[in-house]
Structures are given as C-alpha cells and as structure tokens.
Length: 155
Image (cartoon, rainbow, N blue to C red):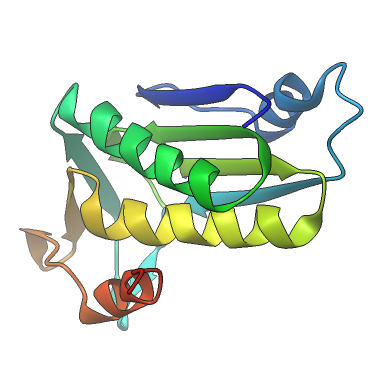
C-alpha cells in the first residue's frame, strides 16, 4: 500500500469531510475514495430504539481491525485507509463508524470498504446493547452478517 492507515477507537464524534480531506491532502495518486458511515438507527425489526451502547476490548479491537486492514491492503491496491469506530452511548442519528478506502480506481476502493465493514460487523470485538421502551439487551450476532463476511473467504 502506498498511503496512510489510520485506525482509531474513540468516544468523540468524527467529521467525515475532515477525515476525507486528511486522507487525500496533497495526493494526486488517488482517483476514488469510498466512504461508509454507520449511524445509530432508531428502529430495529419494528421496535423503537431509544439508545445504543457500544463497548469494546481495548487493544484487542485495534489489533483485530489492523489485521483486517492488512488483509484488505494485500487484496486491493489501496492508497490509504481510515477506520474510526466510536464507543459509548449513542442516540438515533449519531455517527458510530467510519470506513474510508482510497485507491487509484473505484472498484478496489468499493470492494475493500465492503470487505472491511463485513469483517468489522463479524470479527471486531465490539458489543452492542440496545435500549427501548421494553428494556435493554445485548444484541446477538446475526447470521446475515456472517454470510456477508463468508463471501470474502479465500478457498
């Protein structure tokens, strides 16, 4: 890879435009930046969500994310990657995660971003608790997320 890798886990919000500018400033080799921004939903399977709490295992989470970034950079010709994952308590509409992938061409940037999000959903050590009018509970892993990540397995 010919560019910077930024991985941050933080409580503070992020500014998508500022992160893109930081990734691309002074770079003329980048032809595409794909941005995925994950936002706290207010509804899940017809239930109103009033808040979401995300916890993580410090150090282990960063290492796991770095491992998947290394895999992405070995598969696609990337010019830079930024991953920011927030932890703490979120209200519907607030930012949770940002994945930026930069490359000379869009296909590599799109595929790498999708790969990274699929693996963040299934392998990164984050735990999610949803709060609603009926109470609070930890969210179980979803089979659809495992299926999405499985398509990237090399045979």
